[in-house]
Length: 225
Image 1 (spheres, rainbow, N blue to C red):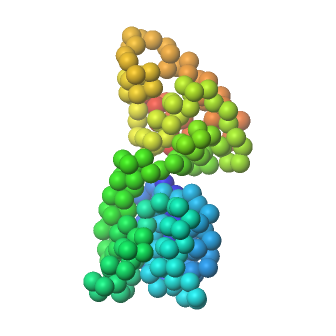
Image 2: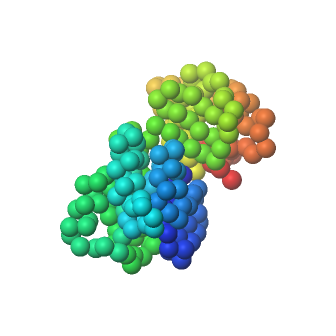
Image 3: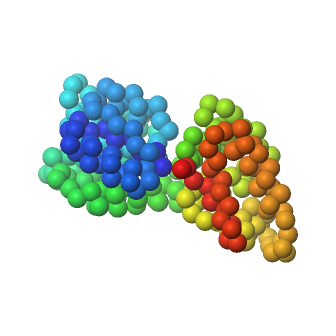
């Protein structure tokens, strides 16, 4: 999960960054409004953690307005020392999905981030799936490893997308058969093995890091190291 953190306070930024990385997030940090705006509109991100008050001429609400005006619907959680009801309403009306007042406990921030990303996934808002340097555009069904495009057959793409939507989790052969083929084969069939071998040859073979892992006797998992 790729997270953009825009926070000017160094102590707070390091606390959040380290906590999210320990929780499996890939975090990019910005310390001012100008660089935050550039990164937020460049994307893609699964979630943006945005400080309300930033140094310079561009503050958190400016970034929110710009992100939404670009048609970017990435979930955004606003952090702010301004905790009045009016300020919370302003943040939400500007396009924020959640608003957390400072000071806060990291565990609460993490729980809110997880809730936002789950909600986005349920509603199909994530049109980019990121696993390490692997990126899937779910609208165009294009796949990239780093900057290199990877050509997949329709069934191969379906397998990869299912694994990506369950990244870090073990997916059983039965789950893959039901999700990708839509009906159940004989559990002894080797159709999964054949398709997975082809997929690995395209996604992992020519790259230094293998993302698709076999969990012996159970199934497969797709995850960045």
